[in-house]
Image (cartoon, rainbow, N blue to C red; front, top):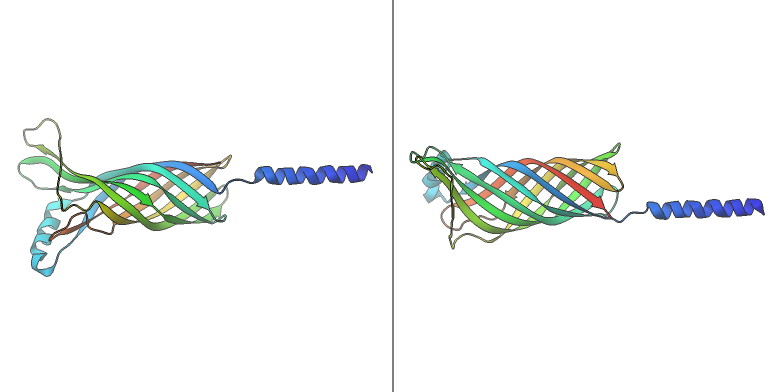
Amino acid sequence: MIRIFCLYALLNTTLFAQSTETTSPWTIGVLGGGAATYRFTCTDESMRWLKDELDSSESRTSGYSYGLSADYSFSEKLSLRSGLVFTQCGHALKNLTAYQSFRINYQFIDLPLTMRYAVPTENANVVFGAGPQLSYMLRSRALYQGIDDVALNKTTINDESLRKIGVALGAQVSYDRYLGNNSYLELGLQYRQQLLSVAQGSVNRLPFSFGAFLGFRQGF
């Protein structure tokens, strides 16, 4: 009788431990980082001279992104990430005689859909991810400082030809460190490429950015 009781107690303890270790497939997090940004330009043959002129007069600048992430795990290795991310990217103009600096910034709200594949290591994962993202361009701004200006000037470019809804492609690789209690710290690199031009006309502009990010996510 005592043996049966002990076996019953052990079985219940084991089942209880398994049930308490079961975690939700969802994790919610925050992320942010900086990037170097530039753009690709496309024109038809008749406007090739304009593309060459723009490429010689524009250069890369800095950008950043931050937002919220939501991950759903299908298995230990495969997961899907979405969320809302604010992204700023653009380019700078160089060799302008009347200006100390002049750059164009594009600001987006992104809705990513990233498929992630994890390669497990001890207490951490190396995670590769890629996927499309819907983007809405909030505004395009010119930030410039003339020769005699003390402060930086900011002007919103109200161009009706600017495309508001667009599509971008994102890719990332990260080192996800398990902190315990179903929480993770992420450190990685990411690339974002606009697939639809942010402008309509003779020159199509496709901004891109490449940089590092830091994130934290928590399961529940």
